[in-house]
Length: 323
Ligand code: SAM
Ligand code: SF4
Image (cartoon, rainbow, N blue to C red; front, side, top):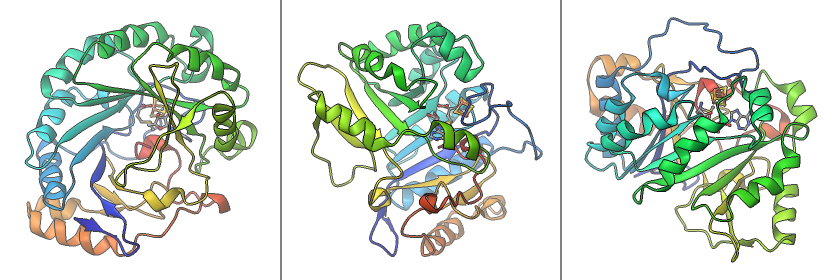
């Protein structure tokens, strides 16, 4: 099992397969995707080698992310490849869900276990204002199908922003009253590109937590291997809440994930100073050498991110790495 110098264990890989995205989320790519490199994203054989190598190092879960992962036509093959890897128990994707009804059947057939869909507003106009696309109803239709799948875990990611959707907090809660879904409120993070937006729109995760506790939500007991999300449940609600509060004290103590960028770089933290290029080793097809390099690099993982000091590392926006 991959373990760092602070005793944290890493059984979870977040694998970005593209940095291209078709949405223009205000906090991420407000001007749309701009390409600043030749688009040589990880190929299926490279992804297979990464999955096998990480699995040998104890990784049990792979989340496929982006950019928008569903823009890759071979996404079902990527899901299948990860799922067929010995040792990988769970394959998840994070998506904006822009064609969810059309895509979901092939993802399920490929063996998808968990689906996170990002929805920042339940109001069609506001959704369009935030993302640049009028896709809310399509995504909600796809979600209804997803909820009916017994073996699929469904989560919604929502970034609350002071002026865009904070006023919808109660609407979101009402929406999960009868739906079997975990709604994750992700605290807006500052990245290299969004400092002004962050200053205007950031809502403290603690503010949301205080509201939940005041309105009868109860903190769930955390599993030892659980990641940084704080979970809440309510006796009157079918759905659950997960709060992801990167600015909270000790957030990084429960870090259980490593990241690979779509260009094959290992990022020890979402806000690391740099990624470590593993592609030359991939080209040699040497799984042992890749495993040794990952293990050695893990020794450099820092105890925490430095977001409080407004140090965002190499991360200009989360589309670069997948969140
Ligand atoms: N395109 C896919 C999507 O939006 O679900 C996957 C990639 S996206 C970078 C992954 C997650 O990161 C999304 O849920 C998105 O809302 C979140 N995200 C992006 N930028 C963020 C920021 N600055 N602060 C907090 N969350 C952010
Ligand atoms: Fe695209 Fe996801 Fe970023 Fe929105 S959050 S612009 S959907 S990568």
